[in-house]
Image 1: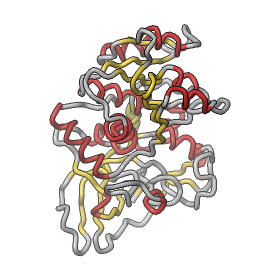
Image 2 (image 1 turned 180 degrees about the horizontal axis):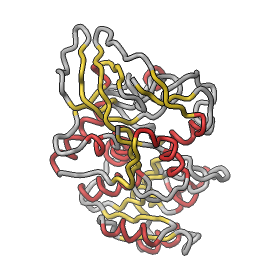
Image 3 (image 1 turned 90 degrees about the horizontal axis):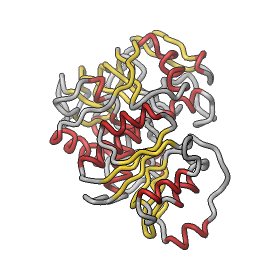
Length: 335
């Protein structure tokens, strides 16, 4: 089978190779992958920032979608032809996260990822694809969509009438916008591009803020909320944006910390104390969250936003495109 693998860090070191086709152990199934999608984590891994002690060679990317083509012994959850997505953290089926569960992530140097034609996965580490989605659409779900769902629904417990602030127009933020609107939530979206903000507005964003036009964008968010602040922030920037996100949040609100896109200095804990804020780290989510999210996607006919599709042999070009930060939604590789 064909697979992409790194023998050392660097986008230019991503090589297309021939590998032996996997054989399923007991409890495993072989999935023929038809699509994969990119996350910022994949770019960080290529740069040697994410898991710098990774073992090589390794197949990158955590997100993919395909069909079951072979069953190992004692498999009961799946049959040949089922359309499935591998979950990001293969050992996190339900319940609270643990250190052991977090050591089972795909595509980060510990376990081979999805940038390959065939993969063997434990039957418990897969979810069914909603019937109305293509493989390319489904491939966008495992990381970005589950992260947004976890942040808003499982942690945020958002309800109709709440106000959510989303930062930027990458995969997590666009899914957060879509899920929030499904739940009757007011959304304030930020970006440095008026064109992207117009697209977000067209998807249902109630208010938009250009953070280049408004460098102190938290003040504009406060103005839009009559000085109260938002109920919940989907914080994908990291240290560079976190202080402003905290300032834009209401007393008793929640900031879901997801990304590390922007560098910056530390957070003053006084602002957390004085506003009684909840600062919650989000590391994707469990299979149960994925399944709950897929039920909502299927019920509402939601379709992921795909910015651009690349061929399998264009994986390096896809990473370069992500590096340009010009995308809106998800970047997909089709096999």
